[in-house]
Image 1 (tube, rainbow, N blue to C red):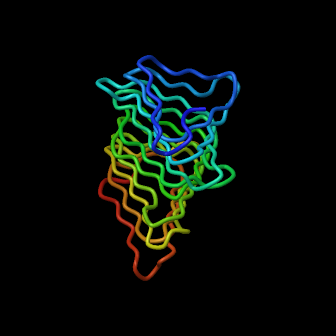
Image 2: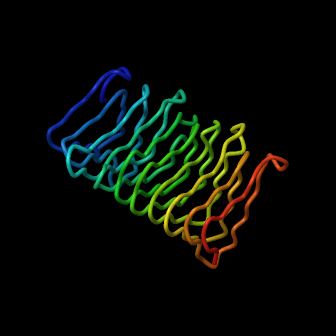
Image 3: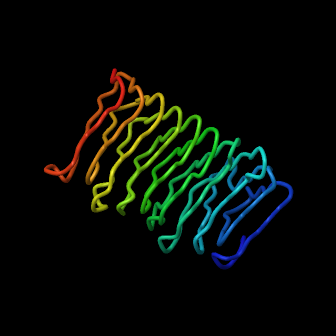
Length: 219
């Protein structure tokens, strides 16, 4: 267990590795450019007991590896790895949706399973891949900025959040696996060349007042 309150800070000069069982986190978990690993060959669960953040960023950053992430309330989760990679290997918010999820900075980011949260925001990255459906529930919706974004046969769904958008901003947006569906309550905006032989389905709930915009080549 790391922390008991959202104001708690657990700081390690070296890395943090806990693969023998599940983990719990409240507040900040910080290392000095050293890896944080909270899952192993057997998938482990990180349970949030309050708003939480995980940071390996001091100068160069380091890898963050998580299994599933759960909570009993809609707690927020921030992830910052700077030059390091972020891997989330299990379902996020599988029982109760998380609050806002923010990926502040990273090199390669990959969510291997479903994400259920109030919102999902990534501010910067080199490569980002989503392999499971992403569902958000508040007005922030899904807002991902990364040089290369891969959507692997999934559904991005922000229709539960009034006025919520889906914004994907990168150089290359790649569709892989099966068909990809993007469902927004309001606008869908894709910046970057879209490629892939998969079907791309676009739906907006607010038909009269919403817009679907592609700012680069499709196909």
